[in-house]
Amino acid sequence: MSERRVLVVEDERTIADSVAARLRAEGFVVRIAGDGPSAVVAAREMRPDLVVLDIMLPGFDGLEVCRRIQAERPVPVLMLTARDDENDLLVGLAVGADDYLTKPFSLRELAARVHALLRRFERAAAAARDNAPSIRLGDLEINQAERRVRRAGVEAHLTPTEFDLLVHFAGRPRTVLPRTQLLADVWGWADECSTRTVDSHVKALRRKLGGDLIRTVHGVGYALEVRQ
Image 1 (cartoon, rainbow, N blue to C red):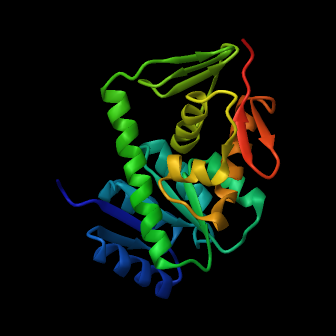
Image 2: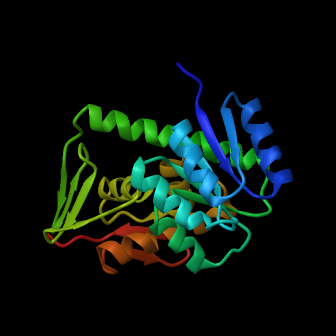
Image 3: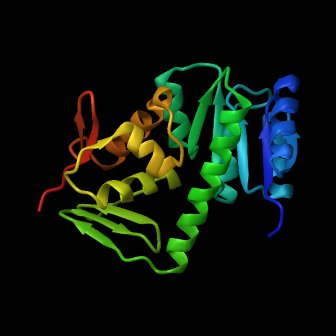
C-alpha cells in the first residue's frame, strides 16, 4: 500500500512543524501550507488523503480553503480552531469538514483522529464498491452505494461524516444511542470530553433533514425517529 499523504494547513509554524513531525512518525507523507491560497494549490498538486486545516489563516480563511478543496475533490478534513464557538463549528461542518479539534490539543489525540477519519473513509469506499443496500424508513431514503439521502423526495447534501452518522442511526431506529457509543462506533474513538463533536453533527443533520428526525434523550444521547 502506498504511503498516505496528509496536507497540514497552519500558519503558526511551531504548531505546523509539531503536527507534521507527529504524523511523519505515524508513517504519513506530510506537506505544510501556511496560508489559504497556497493550501488550495498544495491540495491540487499533492492530492492528499486527508487535510488538517486551521480556521484562522492569512490570505483567506480555512472555511474558504475547505470549500475550494471539496469543490475540486472530496477529501476528509480535520479542522483546527482556536475558538470553541458552536457557530464556527457548525459552519465548518457545513462546508465539508468531517471533524474538528479545539486548540490546545494533544498530538496523540490528533493522530488518533486522523487514523479514525481514514478508517471511516475506507469503510465508506468499501460500502460503495460492494453496492450496499438502500435503506428506507418512512419518508427517509438512504442510498448507501451512491451515498445519497432524500427526505420526502427532497435530496439533502450531507458531508461524509454526516452520512455515516445517519446510516448508523438508521440501522437502529428508535434506539437511544449514547454519545460515547456514537463516538466509538462512527468516529472510531471514545473520549467523554469530546461528545460535542456528536452534538454538532446531529445539529447539522437536523438542519438539513428536519428537526424532528433525531430525538434528544437528555443526559443519554440521541435516537432516530421516523414515521411509518
